[in-house]
Every structure is written in C-alpha cells, then in structure tokens.
Length: 227
Image 1 (cartoon, one colour):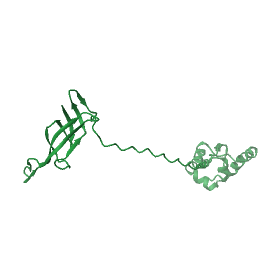
Image 2 (cartoon, helix red, strand yellow):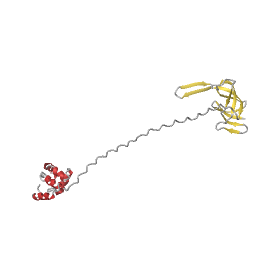
Image 3 (cartoon, helix red, strand yellow):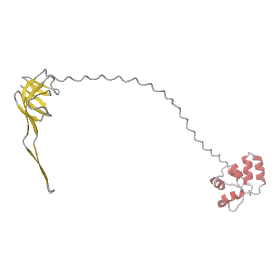
Image 4 (cartoon, helix red, strand yellow):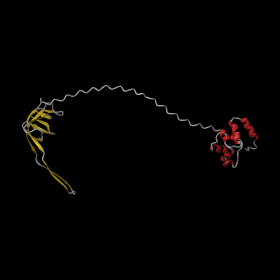
C-alpha cells in the first residue's frame, strides 16, 4: 500500500516504515505529524482525489532535523569581471511513515459559515422632482428679404442700370425712393456716366404707394426719358 501525499509544499510517494527527507517542519523531534492532503491512494485499488481524498491521511514521526548537502551557487558574467560564489545548505527534516489511513482520518472541525446578514431594508428614496427643462429659445427668424421690384418701370432705368442698383442694395421701389439722387449717381457712374437722376426717387415713391396713374402722368411730362 502506498500513497502520494503533499508535505511542506512537495509531493512524495510514501509507504509504511519509509524514511523521507522533507523541508524543515515546525514540530519538535520525536513528535508525530499527520498529513491529510492525500492525492492518490493504492490499497489494491487506486483512488484519485479531487484534488484530495476525503478522510485519507498519512501519519509520520519526526526523527531529526538536519541540513542537506552543500550546494555551490556560482554566477559569472563574461567580459564583465563579475564572479559570485555562494554555498547553500537546505534545512530538512527526516521523517518515518508510520501509517496510511484510507478513511476515517480526523480533521479539524470546519468553522461554521456565518449566516449572511440580512440587508437592512433600503430606505425609500425621496421622489426626485424632475423639472422640465425650459424649452430652448427659438432662434429669431431671419428677416425676410423684400421682394424685388421691377425697377425698369422707372423712366430712365434700363436692364443694366437695374442690375447695378440691385447689386448696390437698392432692390425695391421703397429703397429707391429713400435714396438721394447724388448717391444714385455715384452707383450708376460706371453705366450712365455723370448723370443725376433727380426724378427717380419721386417716381419710385409713387410706384411704392401703388399710384400708377400719377406715375404715368409724371413720366409723360418727362422729355425723352430725361430724369
């Protein structure tokens, strides 16, 4: 009958009356120790643990504490002039296996798991008043562009002059009625030359007010389209 058991962090295959050297144990010489981490047991039938076999144990007696053979540890780095030589003797314990128990080994009673404490009832969270966000202020609507008037209805304004006036921002009859003749003359200087349109604002005012009959009478009095 033999067993594979873990002792002081190492695994050993042991049988009754076998002597084994293991890492130094804390117990005194002559005392008995029990190892219950049995991984495999063969008593005519092989039993494997998962990972340990429940109830199985190995009992041994500590014969003596000693040091192992000296081991030389030598370190060297080539072309660095580095050399270190140390010796080491491992602390060991010699034990003798007295018995291998397949089942019924006494184990320290496991601590009772404390019952989980009941969580205190959660306090009802105060209802949070959700304030409705104030609606974002509407963007001010861009002012609508005034609908362009047909400035060619003014006596003395042709297509080219009409385009020039619109490019300068004079788009409607009302715009033209507010413009001073001297300013209009500067705008159309490249098209008409040095011409001061004295009657254009007057004509535009009548057109803006919708007084088309009066506008026609005025235009009839103009000589050859001179403004």
